[in-house]
Image (cartoon, rainbow, N blue to C red; front, side, top):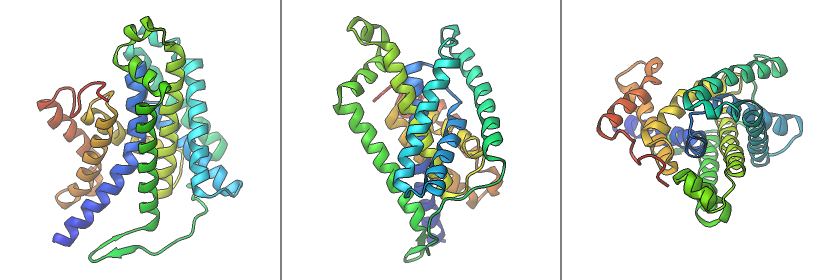
Length: 288
């Protein structure tokens, strides 16, 4: 029993590391643009397919394909914001959020038109699980978690030590004061869209590496990503990381008492519990 519990805990930590990357992308967009952009779901899928094209069609190794996933998803995310969502943001966060849901459905069907509905797999070797006593983990899962940790570390370094990152933080904390200091909010919004959607695409490929890739890859994890962002505190990047691990571990441990079909509900139970005691989430709104 203790061995099973330890295995589920390890699985939850690995799953949480994958959820953390798109959750950070989602919360970054919320912090700067002030609305919940659910197009993250389809952009994550686009990133997964961009990585697939780089890895399978062009023969790139997985690390280079992950960079391609980030870049393509970021560019598509910026284009979608400029063409569709930017003009709707002044109408309010609810209008923009609803438009993002419509956008993600359009993008999902565009993916189906280009790539079809079949599941795709990446060109990677199949390796035996690594065993540590009673605990086992796939080498690919560990590599995916390591890639997620590297991406998160680079983002924290970017936000904490670069002038551009500090500009993003300033706009997220107080857009009016940032404007008075001469910070171009439109430029920062575009940068936030690129970084946030790029992280979503990066996370989408990580999910595809861990399971398989199809047009619903991003949509399937979107509920857990949203739950992670809310539990941690919308707008808080450290909160998104903490929320991702809470949701990831919670979903894995839930199979002890629940059928696996109900694991997605765990994230929303976590939302209800956390918000009942901390209405702004674990780390509060827009806390960096």
